[in-house]
Length: 248
Ligand code: 4GX
Image 1 (cartoon, rainbow, N blue to C red):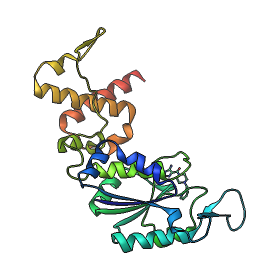
Image 2 (image 1 turned 45 degrees about the vertical axis):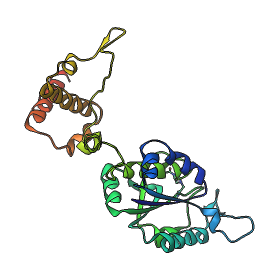
Image 3 (image 1 turned 180 degrees about the horizontal axis):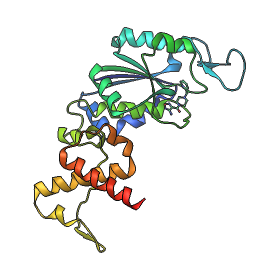
Image 4 (image 1 turned 90 degrees about the horizontal axis):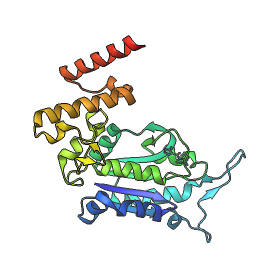
């Protein structure tokens, strides 16, 4: 999987991609990630990347020329990406489904904006996808870019050691995760649920499914609209809904 990131803060991107499973996957050659410093694509003495907005108003806008030059260089040196992703609060909400789509493309370029945003002509010519990581305002697209790259990279075969671990990820199943415990079985009187130490693997799986569903029911009922459930899980939901209806 190939990524190209365009930013005025390349060290911020580098730092976020050096650690953990993504860092190790890069070392192993599973991920080919190139970070491009936008200032390298300026032609003026002071490496200026922003300018005042036409029409007036506060803040600055990223100039089109360096961004066009960076994208042209990426296509030339690295090939045509399957997607050019612009991080912006005005984008489609990022999701596990979007991450899967990007992973399947094999080569993704990511544009990190700063200031009030980028010249609209960059978006028109280059952006194939506009993505938001959530409804809050950040100072730039670098942190969202790291979020997107991390979520996509984990879906590349071999990046996460254990494929079953990815399949079990909460949003892969459309439900929140179940609670996890490790040793000691008794920590200052706080005991691990007995079923987990019972060795009854069928009962453990059942308990975990029920806990995952219960958490989703309580915290993120919106996810239940699209979750794939079996008969037993639908039965649990019916019970919990009936209890809620009776106590309201
Ligand atoms: N999810 N920001 C981008 C500057 C900007 C604005 C418009 C391009 C177009 C954000 C988010 C986010 C703040 C990153 C504004 N660049 N991005 N930046 N939330 O808040 O993705």
